[in-house]
Length: 142
Image 1 (cartoon, rainbow, N blue to C red):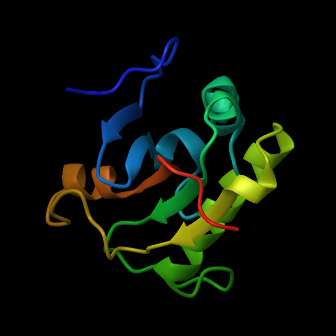
Image 2: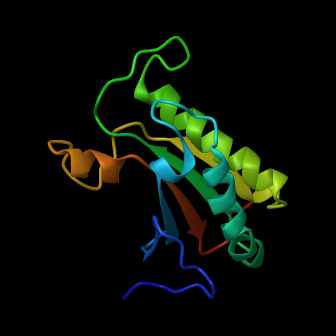
Image 3: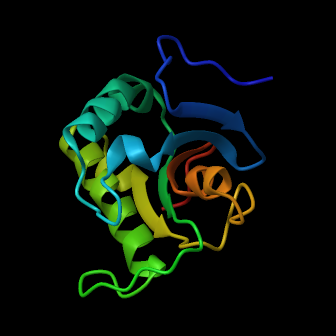
């Protein structure tokens, strides 16, 4: 059973509940152009749509960037580690601009280390390229 948030019906955003909390999983093509970490206009719109949900949530939010296993090697992103981290940071910064408390936010880049599907198919790789917002059930100790 998928947890529901009132008014949260955004194409490309799914919700899952796990042991650590609730995960809002956002397809990377909604947020970024291929190989980039600058939010698109559509990405800002999607994150803006999540502002009310995140504002009503009182726990910590971990912004987690993920990539597929295809290597990237550019001057800006020597590896998928840099790309996934930069994407998580871009989302975190925009959420902070939207008014989500920075004391509740953290950014993590996982590169290709936590795939949802096999990287052997285009469909699997597409599922693995994502940003997840992990809404922690409890406030962390400060």
